[in-house]
Length: 97
Image (cartoon, rainbow, N blue to C red; front, side, top):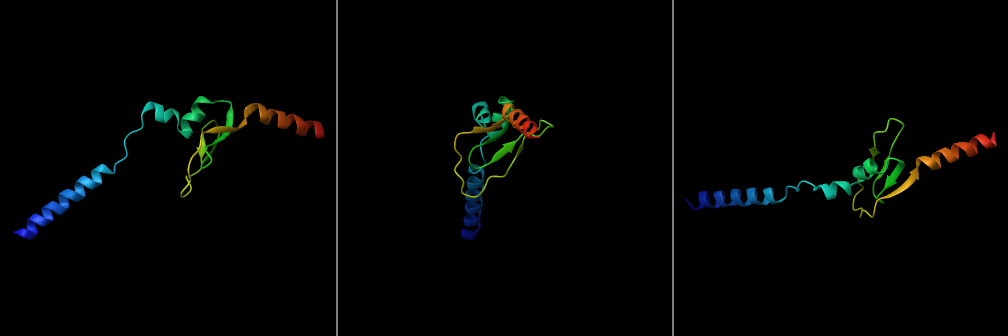
């Protein structure tokens, strides 16, 4: 009888511990602060990063982001390359020809 009670308690403790580990759904403010949310807001940004992951926006317009490396501490999201910079680089390349 004791072993049955111990098993029931162990299963209950395991179930409660597992349910406490489920991540909460992100709030709208957290979603806006996300890497993908940044790309949605900053349409002129072609490449942005949080110092852990990098996202780029190819000609198709859909953002493509890298995976999170192990033990990386994200920083504030910043734009690395904008559309205007890309056009300026193309002009410089044409001038050299």
